[in-house]
Image 1: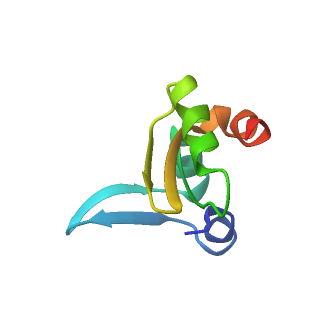
Image 2: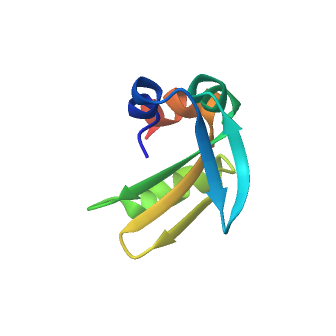
Image 3: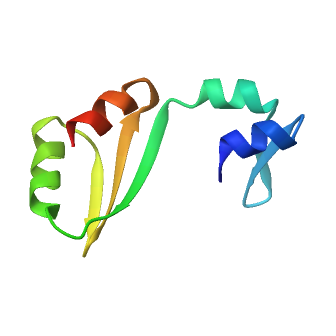
Length: 84
């Protein structure tokens, strides 16, 4: 979901996982509470280099075919994106 869009449209946000409320707060507070960003990329060329980049920096990732999900600390996201 697009949190910027949610912030514009909603006063409160509730996240539900398998019937259980896991978060209930204002969009601003929820956005500030995010510690890990999950980046889902479709890689046309360079998957091996990207995996090596993540391995070298101990960045959690899961690759399958041409798709990779990378977990990056939210406060380090800009630096990560500049580096790849």
